[in-house]
Length: 87
Image (tube, rainbow, N blue to C red; front, side, top):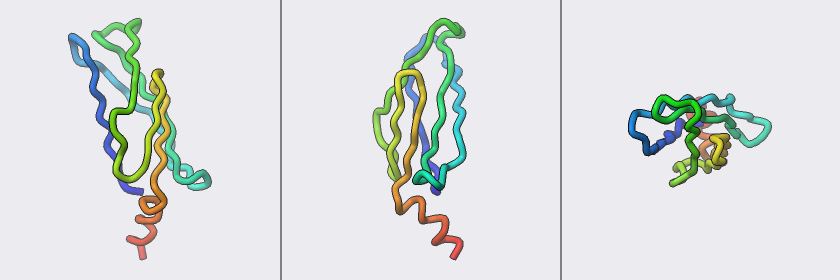
């Protein structure tokens, strides 16, 4: 699987402190990667950010709910690329 980049844009008066936790690709389920984003705004754990997808990655799709739970599903061709490169 090729690497994808996720960009987060957050409006806050100070730098947010996001943390991403993700699973390994699930080969039995199409290579899906699931995970969640946690963080706080303005150094306040009571200020909960919300999340949304503003653009899709090149080699798959990503969904995210407002709580930060996400699923990345790679395209079939991007799942097969590592095997082709290994020969």
